[in-house]
Image 1 (cartoon, rainbow, N blue to C red):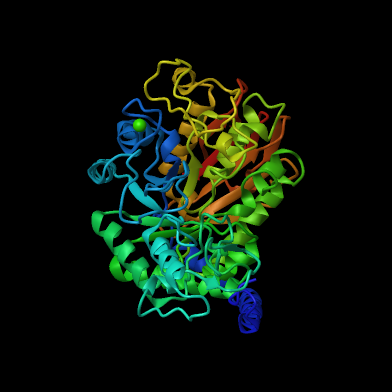
Image 2: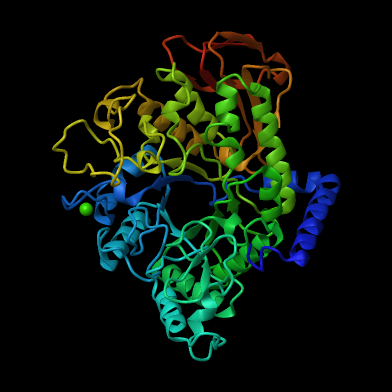
Length: 534
Ligand code: CA
């Protein structure tokens, strides 16, 4: 363990943070709910498409997805209803995933040129699409000039001498030690070790260093100056591993720094952890932290659809999260997602399903509040599980092997058997996963209170298989959403909600119709009804 990880003071601070959070939870629930209502219609509530750059669309025939390829697909992205994109890292790096940055100011040549990035930014903005840049600050690559300079200096430093940052400021950019500590790697040819929590080729930055923090400010200013609309922060729970207080303080620094440059800069952090830790980290003032408790295998959405969690609990969990996060940061914007580039594709979660359950899962994701994120390829139910490379398979544009858009995929990727047809076929089929998700996004974008309102459970309608809730908003019309997540038809009496209820949207995964007569709602298996008021 590093000195920073063993710090007793920081442990005490973490404890204080948890106690503070618990006290807030008991005293101020209403505040969060009320402030949440004001989010309705907030321009921050977007539908965001995550693009793994190297696997999306190849514009020049070299097999690697690139920036011009993404630009060529903006009509497709916009037509689906997305109004923001998160691009995985675009900076130079020896790895295919590029989550270890050589140079924060450059563009990886395999993805294109700086001019290509500018052109993509402009084309996105012309279509009303925001661009969120992936910012990897926990570590750099070992090829980063900062690490090379520090490494060269320590190679030249005579044995036993103390390093002097006035000779090499980069020594202070990383965490070096003469002791072989847990999470440290040996700097070959020296008596030194360096912290590298993930991998020896990804040295951890010393985030306590004022010089490193000044570099981060400059990097943010450079890209915000170019017009980037926000940042997705990688691995925020690893900044100070296991130290929620220190991580929260660092997030506060990042949020305040970004907004001192651009008051509208949006920040979403990858805190792959539980709800209470996420809530603590929201006290940093960060706009969003991904909703990991709902996502992936074992997440609330998958558990509900596999019958391991009641449909009513899905509603309870949304309400609890909105309250707890809203208390920690009244201005927070939820960040629901279902899968990302580190998770098995959702096609593998329901082996018996030929479409309906997959479709319901996406509605559960996209009907949550805040900015909803969708990983590329999920809109067609792509497959890909097991090793990371498989989760980042080439976008399945068509089954034509000569389709110039299709990428080669990450080196070492297995051959993947797709469960659903390629996009080209799904676009022609009104019953496809693609058509369903497009319709769900259309509805999400049509009724602003879906993304911007506050969830209010309608207890009398909820049961093991039916999730029912209002989205209340002070500035937009309320909507009532009823989801039948089970494989049997249901009848529900809605007369208690009055005669002004109007069945405005019907989403059915099969040929059976949703009907609403004299206050009684009849729903086939796997279907959704959305009501407004006359
Ligand atoms: Ca290419």
